[in-house]
Length: 270
Image 1 (tube, rainbow, N blue to C red):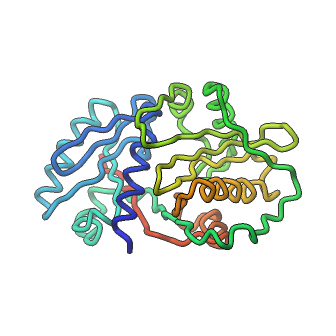
Image 2: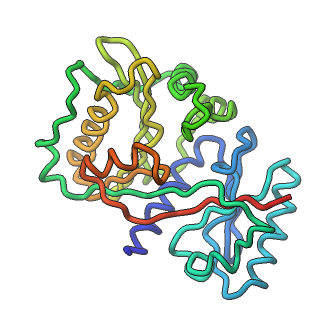
């Protein structure tokens, strides 16, 4: 497992989303990420902690409880492999009487760009990516692209706070680029996608297609085009995050992505 790459991806992930109304509180051996508008655990969590025993862990949880309670949020933990002590001893730290596992996520990477041109997306449509300039308009299209009314779709029905975050987007870091794209078919906007990258890593986020345009190869064609952008920038690693066991995880592997690591979201029981 490439721990240094995992750390680099985590840092890009956190910094890349601070511009969407995310806030990060840096402590000595952990950090708290939260969003004033978004209530879900994917935007409000403790992470990047370094502890040696359960006593230190409990102290962090207690401190975080106060922060999240003030913001009317539940305390969540974003657990990543470089947090070795807790990650490698999950059963000891996350007992079922105190925590609930609510999401198991896979980070996948793409590094063999020599095979990119040979990928057949099986898409017969004319798919183009267009940079968004009006973030309010983009936010509205993003939200509508995610709506599926499918309770089994972990990416569906986003917290309404995401709309506000995208509308308020501002660039914070000079060494990170954040690009927002409309997905167009025959001039019609049918979805959205996002790229967050620096000179080493190219992250693909929020790839969403409107329900009526799914299963037509559009998502695969968009993914290929974003990987081509990554290659053109001479960035050696592309990555994305997906829910373990959900259909995109298998699709991305067929596309040429490889699993880098598994990460966990735990929610503290009330």
